[in-house]
Length: 264
Ligand SMILES: [Zn+2]
Ligand SMILES: [Zn+2]
Image (cartoon, rainbow, N blue to C red; front, top):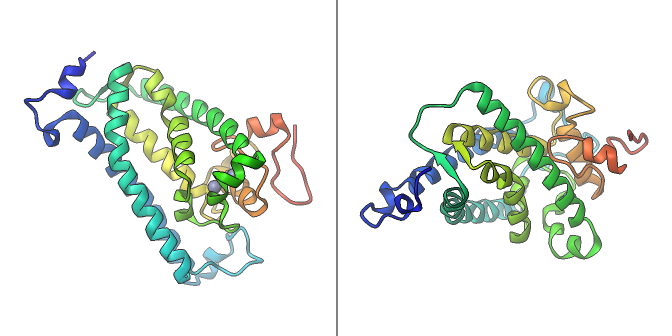
């Protein structure tokens, strides 16, 4: 385990420090996945391609087409999101180093370790996310915090970043609790986790039910992905989980269509 002195060493400038290196790795992966997915989603929102449009989930409604009002909101929110990431990532690194250690320089761990840790991250994130999201749908918390995320009943990838600062803390807590708790992780595993989580949330808000590249194509009941979260935005309730439908099935909040309830 490295000591905190290496993190805080005054002889090393911030831009040569592991704090900086960690922040650059995580932010780069985040931005690459976020903007690759969203560039594609923005493009297909603006251009009509019938063989792609057939996969829209809310086909009964017009496409968003990014009118000026949504463009303004998204630019503002994505800028706030990026700036808060710049402030948050060093704090996250200090938290990692306070409770354990992130290996930034060693070689990649065995795939079995990487996959085992990623599985734990997903299970933990899904559980914390479900319960906190469930709470956010109680009247006071919804009105004062979570409503901002539900402005659009017809979500698209970039709307994933719409959130109150308190909700942003909830999202980060759900995402980072297990990685910090594990004490020993590697930057490769952390970056893979960031890529998976960003892809998952952008896909869930995409408004499309694409074959092959989305979890609901392979595991429609267990990982309903965009189908479940789009329905959640459309109705403002049900499907509170992120990766899995397990907690929703257990709590009777799993619903994928207005007429049919798929519960326990
Ligand atoms: Zn919600
Ligand atoms: Zn959402």
